Amino acid sequence: LRIMEFSINTACQSRCDYCYAAKFRRRGDTLLEVEEIAEVWGQARRLGAFAALLLGGEPTLHPRLLDILRVLEPRKNIVSFATNSISLTEDMVVEMKKLGIFVLYVSMNSVDAEKNAAVRGYRGHLDHVMRVLDLCRKHGLDVVLPITTSKPLLADTIELLDFSRKNGFTANIGLFAPTGRAEGRHEELFDDEFWKTLRELYDRNPGLRGDWDTNLTLEVGCPAGYEKLHVSPYGDVT
Image 1 (spheres, rainbow, N blue to C red):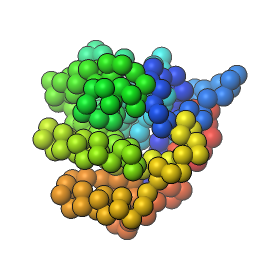
Image 2: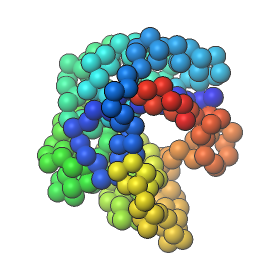
Image 3: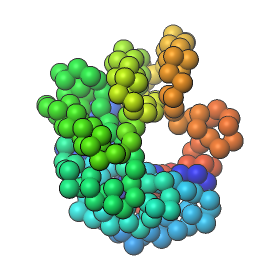
Image 4: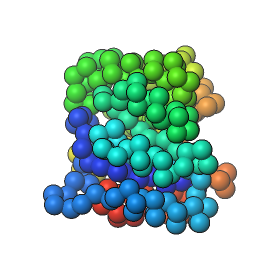
């Protein structure tokens, strides 16, 4: 086991057009407590995990985010979280840095403000992203741009990769899945032309990464179930 992903809440200010996490919301169910996350992380560590990534919802809306980060022991493990930037403050960035967090996943979908807002379902979202990117530079945090792509999003993906390269960020490609808010949209999945273009993007961007090509085995393939596990806000393991 290499990495655990914890979706720690379902609350979010955005309504992303393709949000897979929308399926997690369950009325009346209780979110995992910090102590339960710590117990699961302990089990994962015994299986070899050395990295943890917090997801949501939006992790910064969790009232005990810093406590969760603490139990993951960032000074001993690679720990980070993905954020939409909207509610992330400079004080939070400073506290994260003190805990030993050195990298932040900052999500965006286009360098064009209107396009980005349309996909994110939140007007002015790009302004928040740029503010947080400046905070990361100021406080010495590395930035990963997690880029979800599909046939309709491919042109914006190319622009985001250029933006990432010019600014010294790392880009991580994630493939669109027809689930959650995008349930049933199979027509947006991938064809031969998509894969050809994606391969060319890899050739032009040596630092580009995706879930399927960062395996410890050095083989290309889905890591789910053997190198990567995901825990839902309510404790379901997938």
